[in-house]
Amino acid sequence: MVEQARKIAAKISISYIIIGAIWIIFSDQLSHKLAEGDFEAYIFFQQYKGWFFVLITGIVLYGLVYNRARDLFQTQNKLVNKEYELQASNEHYQSLFKHNPDAVFEISKEGAIRAVNPEGEQIMGYSCAEIGQGGMSKWVVPEDVERVKFYFSEALKGKPSKFEFQVLNREEERRILRSSLLPIIVHNEISGVFMIGRDITNFRRDEERMIESEKMSVIGQMAAAVAHEIRNPLTSLKGFVQLIQVTKEVNHDHLDIMMSEINRINLISSEMLILGKKQHVSFQKEEINELLKQVVVLMIAEANLHDISIELEHSDEKMYVLCDANQLKQVFINIIKNSVEAMSQHGKIQLSITKKDGNVIVTCKDDGVGMSKERIKQIGTPFYSTKEAGTGLGLAVCYKIIERHQGSIVFESEVEKGTTVTVTLKEAHLSS
Ligand SMILES: Nc1ncnc2c1ncn2[C@@H]1O[C@H](COP(=O)(O)OP(=O)(O)O)[C@@H](O)[C@H]1O
Ligand SMILES: [Mg+2]
Image (cartoon, rainbow, N blue to C red):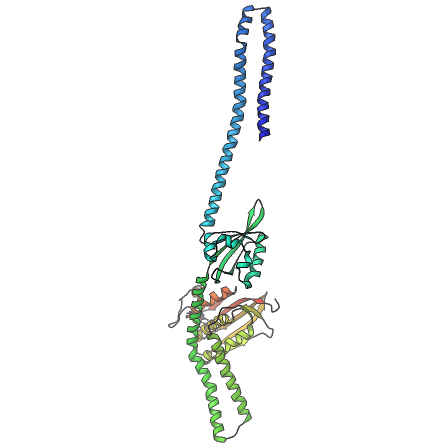
């Protein structure tokens, strides 16, 4: 800048000197000529040549200085405008950051938390400075650290992501954040990561309550059928005991039957107990054939009451899915229960388990009343039910649970022919 100013000043001075020199040479020669010829003109010229010089250099200097000054002011104007724009964009960013109803964390490439907005401070119960003292791993619950690190490294590669994880706040309370991670790109380079998170803990708790209460209501509805199912082996047991009392003899074949009846009662009642138990949602690898067998044990009771058979075509190969076993059972119970209700008397429900493209696919096929296309569209809407005593919550809960398992449910149906429900879940490998 100084160098440039010096150049401009030098240019103006040199221009002045050159014009001066040219004028001196020119005026001297003209004076000579006039002195030889026209003396009066010579006097006139001598008298006014200084004024001429001042006038000409004045005009030239005005031109030069005007040009330069104009450039200078234009540049300065541009600068002021740029600064104004910069300030406006900074204020834009600050509004987005400060007044965001979601928590915003600015994280450096190294994983240090550089800035946290007021909502982030509120969720964590710590100030921005306190949060900045620890890296992400200090606030994330231990079981989620690896996952957060993975998505963080993906964001550093330029790939944004959406996921849920839990943080520990000042009260050592776990809060669930539904968050997005996105790269901060400055001058075409990734300088860090923004994490935008919404506290969904309360929402999740309400959802949990709804799933739980729907489960309890289904268990209530199943109770009668299950009690009935237990009464049959009990009746047979009673018969054998009475026989022993009369004959005072123990028949070994009878003992085997008695044992198997006791096992059946045990199986049904323990499945009912497991299902009814209030448990923390926990995702574990479960074998899907085994899980469905346990569901069938319970549903057979309901089916038997209506003379409906349930066939489970399970695979010999073990297939695992990462799931909350009880919630997944709840899904299949609801689906099978709907099939039973769609058939009223007689009929067959076919369950099958297959594997395709890294997914485990469970289908439930019935030959019940079926549904029209319009009705299929309504499925999953809470309180949508065509049954007199229906709650219309069963499938709404199924959708919620399957969504949490990152799977899908698809309904295919034909009126008066039957319905096939397909549940697709990601296969989990036991070793991973
Ligand atoms: N397998 C099926 N066959 C025919 N209709 C079905 C079937 N499954 C679900 N539906 C329809 O979907 C509606 C909603 O089901 P659901 O959410 O379980 O509530 P509910 O069973 O209490 O009615 C049912 O009322 C019924 O009309
Ligand atoms: Mg139902």
